[in-house]
Image (cartoon, rainbow, N blue to C red; front, side, top):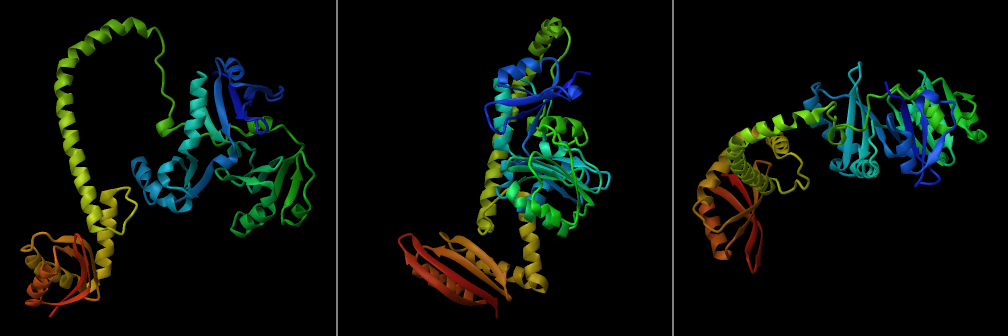
Length: 396
């Protein structure tokens, strides 16, 4: 098996990288530019370590087990924990024996930037991991590395954070209060321990300061299931051997298939156009039916949620709602030019916001409805494009 090289960007000089061979941990750490790293990593597995502050690690439980179901459910479970829209993040997960999911979250912007830099330099990465999960770890023990004003903290097999040093006096006690109970704290730092550490209910074990990459090399491999190069960023396997000899055969096979593929492609394009039209119509209908929903991710799932909510809201009055909807609908269908904007059902009444052609049409509609139902015009505003009105409709 090829040797493994760990690399990270230099915190002091972002244009430079540091790298170290895992199998030669005692060797001096190399520092240089991308071209020098490319030369040093030839024939070896190159692993890029991301700063702990760039990767958010989470643990959670989901009621689903299959990977396909997890892929669909995980974004909804995480969106309230993130500062930005879930679509802006790349998610990688690992199913633990306990049933919990260990999840690594990193922005697509970060992933695109990092992979782009190495692609541009012609360097193939074998993996990408958060630095916090490469810190040495023992059960019931925190591992803390302090470099200048940045700290990397590992609290369990799958949990770690990147923290500003000034925030440590607040974060560590809070973790203890929230149940992250540990007996001791292993500390690697080129600074003297701060006084506040003495007040922690932990035994502080000061380790001999070790250069970061050497420390990460000693802990690397303990949590390698969370490789960030997964999904859209997965490594594409390359063919091996003298595959060029098979090119003529492949070319003939492709030529034989092209006649059939042409017809299939044409049919596929037609079906895709039709499917796109149906999806657009479904989206438009959803927006018209549920105008209060501003963020639409999955039309079918969100429509099911809204219908369930309507059923709960209606309660025992569900049959009354359907009667009102049917009886008023029988009248509405005879009026052309009406525009339906919003519908709510509460307290045994339908509140309907519509736009009519003019006041005369609104008055005619009201009279028709009153022949069978109780109708109250809650508001009516005239404009150049018609009259916007809100009606309350009840059974007599």
